[in-house]
Image (tube, rainbow, N blue to C red; front, side, top):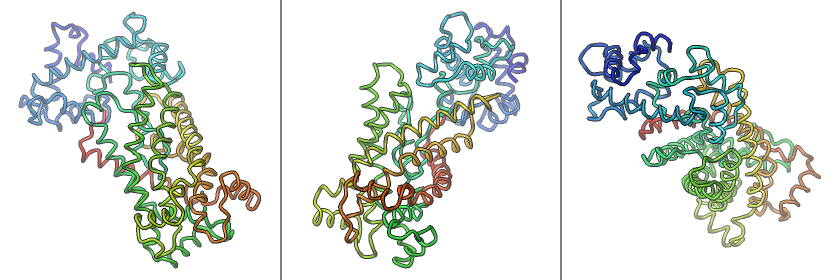
Length: 477
């Protein structure tokens, strides 16, 4: 495809600045299907499809947003030429930043070195796969012409976009809030895209959590009451909840779970940015280790801020019909009967659970990414939606599995004041009690409904997230 583009549309002789208008004009005429002197979005999409030019996601919208100066929904030749000229300048800067030895071509070792400075470690073999998708003449190096032709209509501006293909997006919500926050570019921060993405993720999380709330409440019930009877299973648990409080009781505690999304996301995002500044030099790109530490500390900060809501969510979920009339009534009764300290019961195991969750989530995701690049990246480094969703769901599930015993102890500590005759044990005491009475399997009670909600949660949150981004005008590079 790139050879055809160079030979037919972009003759080599036309690479000189003096002949650029001719080159642009030839390409413009190929896209202007009806010959009316302007290119609309439909013509651009059809024309690029016919030319076989590879695009990033939503590249057409990005081109129009940037190139349509008079905002009439069409590109005339002047706008088209200006966009390509400006884009080539950006791509020239990106090319020079990768060409470390200034020899006019990019090699695999330079790709490895550049990605390391951006916090992404890949092997030289993986870098060669990236080069293969751009290299036209089979030299295993990429010169300026190959680089420019490959990215001509792809509205990326630098090598960071390769990393952004693999962005482990927090728009995918599986009900837990211990993931490391998203990275946003300076352009996204200045344009306001960052808060739109966070809002889209928050709404997606609310819909996803509400859709899977019955499984979440069942998990909590099995964590708290499972030790009383080994007979509590998924079917029996649902039957018991419906018998006690009706169908609506399956969503008990969900309101608190949804409400806490906004403050938690805001605090986590703010804290993550502050910790990144503390751990990196000014202008330096954050590495994987620094990202893990910053993300874990941001998660701990956010959890400290909203933890009373976690306690109320558990109390509401475990509570019987009529015990609490709502969130405010629950808070008032806890404060009256148990004091302020009750709002932080289980805080220590919750805090300790952040490290294994975030660490394993990040490590497994990086491992899956490396495996895909090694074995399946042939024509493009873009893995596609299904691969990203699968990697994200699997890595988060592994993170949950590692931190689950701590999550179970946290939940029991939050709820043990509600259980008649139950001793008020600390974290170590609860661990000993569970292992002595129930064995190691006791630390994993309720994990089946927890895993059952992963796939529907991922699917629902992704669909809502993508639709909300479109509604809010979030452009994807």
